Image (cartoon, rainbow, N blue to C red; front, side, top):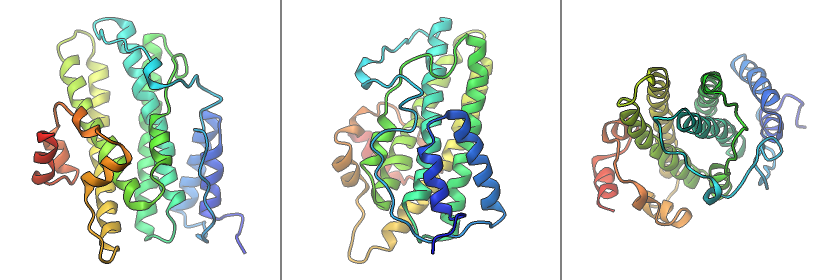
Length: 268
């Protein structure tokens, strides 16, 4: 019999929670119960979610409809940037929780890792939301797209999920974050933004490393199966490596990428 304190059922409730504030509060309670070993871990049937949890809270549009305000010398440009990153961080909360929810019967360390990642993403999201107030913007004031959610629902097995979300999409964030920081350093009065982005970059390296660990773990459990990272990504997310112009090589190596993998990415 599945008890009311089943870890996976609690995760399902949080993932389906559409209210941003309630979701974060519910996660905090789950995190405390998890640390106190108050959960049972009976397997359940998982859902394929049809819409992201924020569908009713935010204006969700196709990515091509979002107008990029690139001028970081203007307040509106910084505001757009912060809102974009806030949405990535909020989406990443659900991604980390879904990684716990969807993949069951794994070592307890796996769930510890992704609960820790979710906690980091919550903290990043709240820090960005606080900073956004100085730029007269709040989360939800601008339209967003559901790219990260869509990618997660296209990777419903452990190997593709670890390859696509942390090891590809979040790893791309290591590159873009470093690029943005380099641009902000040339602009006056952006030190607070720079410091926040540097914090996020450093902690995201660990998130990608956790994805790398569990990607390699899952691959090691497959008999007579060769994990080809590039083939996996190409199948789910075609031509995406061609979009990487400048790699954050140091960060990627710290996050588990081999020199051979980096060389391949640089050659595409």
